[in-house]
Amino acid sequence: MCGIFAYLNHLVPATRKEIIDILINGLKRLEYKGYDSTGLALEESDGNKDGSIKIVKQVGKVSDLAHQVKANLDLDKSFISHVGLAHTRWATHGQPSINNAHPHRSDVDNEFVIVHNGTITNYKDIKSFLIQRDFKFESETDTEVVVKLVKYLHDAHQTQKPAFSEIIELAAAQLEGAFAIVAISKHYPCELVATSRGSPLIVGVKSKSKLNADHFPVLNSKDMRGYFGGSYGRKDEDLQYHPLGPHKEIEYFFTSDPSCVIEHTNQVIYLEENDIASVHGGVLDIHRGSRSIDESTHREICTLKLELEQIMKGSYSSFLQKEIFEQPESVVNTMRGRVNFDTKEVVLGGLKEHIREIRRCRRLVFIAAGTSYHSAIAVSCTS
Image 1: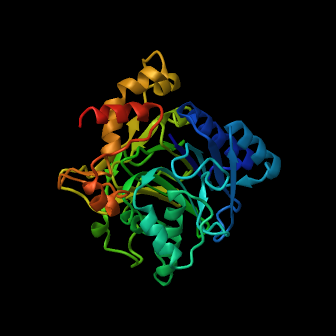
Image 2: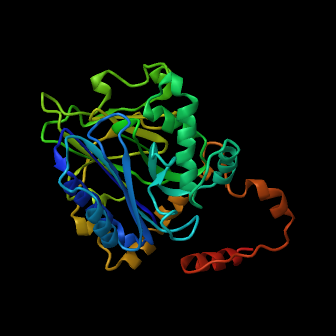
Image 3: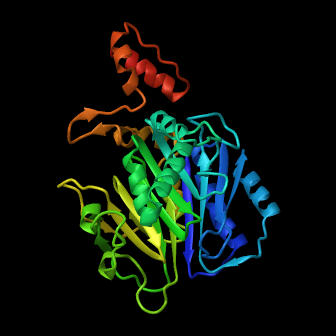
C-alpha cells in the first residue's frame, strides 16, 4: 500500500531542515502500511517562478532516505513559503528501484512532479500516445505516464496560460482506475493541486488566525465559466478557505492517512470522489469537473478527535485484526473508479482490449501470493 504526504507552508518561515523533518516524520507514520521505496520532492526557490525542484529517492527504509537528504542539502536555507512532497511505495507496476520510486517527474528539468496512490488501468494507451509524441520514459510505472500527460497538456495549452488546477483536471479526465494524485510544478511555485478517485485523500489545515468558515461551497467547472479564460479561479472570498484578518500565515497537510496529520492539526477536510483541491497564495479552493444530482455541494471542516495510536490501530489488538474488519470498506474503495453506479457498468481499463479473447477462454488461471492467493481460491470456488 503506497502512502502520500505533502506539506505546504504559506508565510510560515521554516528552514529546509524543519521542512524535511516534517516530511520525513509523515513518512514514518506511513511505515506501518508496508513499502519498498521512498522519496520526496522539495522546492529549491522561495516562491520564484521557474525555480527548480529537487527530487531525492531511495530503495529501502525511510531512515535511509532521511540520511541521504540531510547529507546532500543545505539544511540552514530558510523559506517563507514552500511546498514539498513525500511518498512511500509498494511496487505494483515495475520492481522496487530508484527509477520506479516516487515522486515522478515530467522531464529532466522537473517541470512537473507528482506522487500517486492507486492504479491507472489505461496507462498503456496513454503511454503509447505520449511515446508517439517523442516523450521518453525513465520508469516502468503508471505514475510517470500521468506526470508526462500533465506536461503534454500544459505545453499544448501554454498560450492560453491555464491555471495549474485546470491542467490537473484535464489530465484526470483522461485517467481510468482508482487514484489519489498530488502535484507540484516549478511553473507554479508554492502551489499544490490534488485530486482523488476511489483512493482516500485528506487535507489538514493549521493556522494561528481564525479561518473564514467551517464549510464552503464546491463548484463544478461549468459554474466557474470554463477553461483557459483567466476567470477560472474564484475571487469571491466566501467560496475559498483562508485565515481572517491581516495575518495570512497558514499550513496545509495533504495525506492518504490521518495518522500523518493529527500531530500537526485536528482540522481536516476529506476530499470526495473527483474533487480537485488547489492551494494558491495560501488559499484553498475545491471544485470538481462534474457533479451528480445527489452529490454534496459543500465540504465540511471536520475535527479529528482520535489520538495518534487510535487512528493507526484503533480499538483493534493488532493491524491484522484491523485489516480483517476493514475488508468491507476496502472492497468498496476497490470498486470506486471501476464501477459506475449511475450506469451500473463495470469498467476494467486494463482488460478492455482483451475482452474478446477472455470471452473465448474455457479456463482462467489466477497467479497470486499472500491474501491475493486466498482471494483467488474464493473466486475459483464460485465457478
